[in-house]
Length: 112
Ligand SMILES: Nc1ncnc2c1ncn2[C@@H]1O[C@H](COP(=O)(O)OP(=O)(O)OP(=O)(O)O)[C@@H](O)[C@H]1O
Ligand SMILES: [Mg+2]
Image: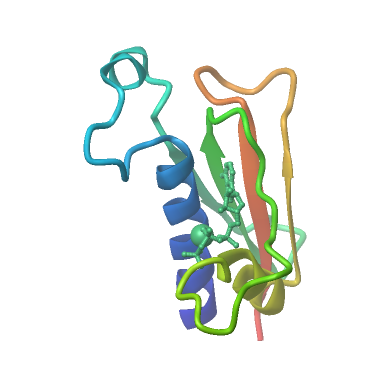
């Protein structure tokens, strides 16, 4: 479960940053319209021996793993970590996403 915690933490942190909530002065309009809301869904489907993690946000840009992280950089490895720990991960922008969300980043954690 420690790995699942780490993956949730990386994906939620990314969503918070993508929503601008980690900035010193988050955009008031985003707060008022709900555009900075983040939705975390944790699910164990009946037919899978796995935990499905979903983090929904409304940020227009998309997760891009960084391939060229300088060795002394303390940032830029979150998705590489997710990739190493999860059985799979990715993102979708479903047309019928529940408002205000537009995008879901997901990861599948298999039970040991
Ligand atoms: N939910 C998201 N919405 C939009 N862009 C995202 C999202 N998640 C990640 N990204 C983009 O993908 C990039 C890489 O994410 P990653 O987590 O690997 O590194 P980081 O967040 O920059 O640094 P670290 O996680 O190591 O602190 C981010 O810098 C960001 O540009
Ligand atoms: Mg990150």
